[in-house]
Length: 225
Image 1 (spheres, one colour):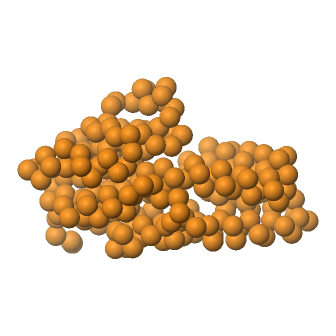
Image 2: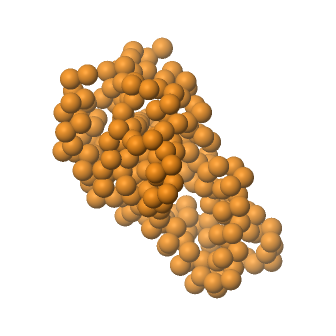
Image 3: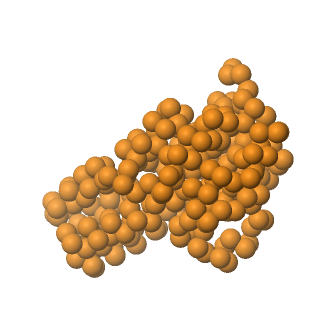
């Protein structure tokens, strides 16, 4: 079993380190250009229905379902290339990798994400995040249900979870209590849903942008834990 660390930093990816909303806007524009607005809307209807069913974003799974609706349209083959080859490094939030490096001076940094087994790892790799955390990447179907596995792989006296979804932060806080500091970067469409944000307990730390974490007083206080 690995030796416990004093502190481990758990970073979400989408809209935490990487501006995934912009990726989706680029995909929508590409779909409209290739197929028109109606079929673009078909795709995103399938995408949202699938997300409700499985609980995470599955872009390639939605593409498979879209293909079943339009089996004679060979143009769809280019959409998978658009997704797989997308320049994710260009969509990193300002100084996102600097934040990871800064936290890495205090303890191991780990990606803790939800997603599929093809597109999500590809996104983490091509963005440069995989290298920034030295390959410490965990991708689950529902990460808040897998905390025992997280602890087994990266045991620590204390955890810091950075995530744009207050639902996730609240679920992890309910399980780990004082052993975790929850950090909420107010970025992306989930964070902008003020009604949803207010429906959960307040995170321990709230920041407007991920780069604010570098100089945040809580990191200095963390050194004393």
